[in-house]
Image (cartoon, rainbow, N blue to C red; front, side, top):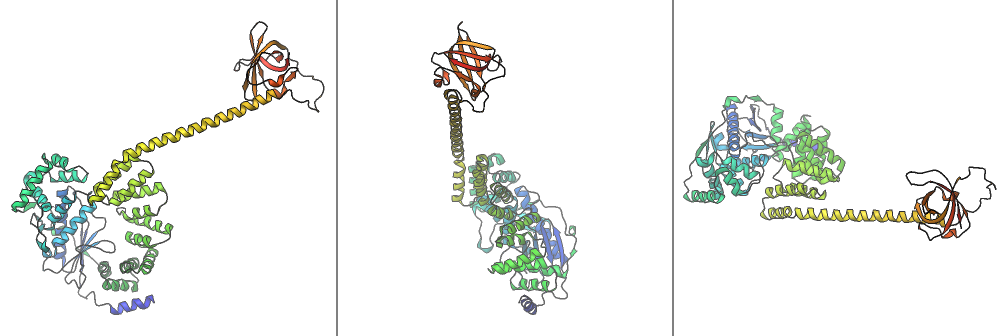
Length: 565
């Protein structure tokens, strides 16, 4: 069925590329301009967009604003239905801007395009600022004008029913008033670093936030909004050389606008021609996905992967639809390798990975690449808390609080950061209790082992003389003990499997003797069964021993016989 479907598409394919179409390409910064309206229109477009990027960069303090995906700008001689409803769309592998037919490049670059491009640059390069400043910057730069390389800013918004508001007026004051202009980037830098508004204003202008805000309100109410010239980047249209572009690349570029059936027809044409196969399969997958034909989309993405696609987005969409976790993780790793700027592969890996340390690393990478995503910071903070890293968790909550636009969400993250210290104290107290309990259990275990050994030693000395071994010979031809002491047995020290006897002799001197092996001792007469460890009841003994001094145990010899008298 698939070849037939493609045949039908080809039959319906209009003459999309006329024989006399001539397309040229110009590149600069994150931009790529494609034009069939002549080289002059293409160069003029690129200069205008580059000056816009320069103007925004000098206000926010970033000299080289970039985007995670390239921005392709079409300058059509005749758009032929390729225009999109949104000012900027995300195509197959890059953002796309289609300039409508308005007679001139200047007229074609609408305030809506400028506003959306401002949002894209802010999102891609700068941490979240207070919403009032974000909105004011977007509105202010929506009306920027570029004539050649001359940049004029400050015209009040008015197209589409939009009127100046206080947020716009605040930025207008800070940019057009010489007292503030040179330091506005200092203010914005502090705000995007999370500094509170009052110290941020004082650091930049030496005035409180309330003072500047009052002046901004007066400025807004007065309604006397003057334009101002911003310094431009030296460039000329000739700085951008013309590059040729093939018919195949033009077909693919237009198809990548994902403009419904027209794009589908272009992709089918490329597949039939056996060219740009991975790109065409991916594009068809994205169109199917947009129409909720999930199984078809998964099949196209899988075909593109098998064909060796170099598109990070293709791997991301394939992984999103792939039920096999191992295959999905490999696809996401490919996507991250192709475009390390993207946050989505890391967030998706964090959602799939079961290893806590890897999940934490993935959330950290995602948050670093898209610091405006409050959900990333929330997930990262929770991952740090799971590992009891309370300092890092507090920092993540703070970043999430700054990234949150919704006041309720911001309040929740602020509260989560405030309770971190108590969580840390509770955890440390629980750890102390756990360690104390483990130590107590260990002491109890050692005591139990000591009691067991003590009872065993007592048993060896209280069970009486060993029974005669029927196999033993009735005489002893070994060494004879030469030492002898007679007196009172005062104490028996149990030393594991050995014992030490303390005997008080006739001169009231204490003689210490070692019982090296109780089983080898010969007991003679007396109530020896009462013998145990510790201090003894007074009893007379006569002990023969081998003189073998032991300095460590302070004994004079080893016991051979004990005679109870």
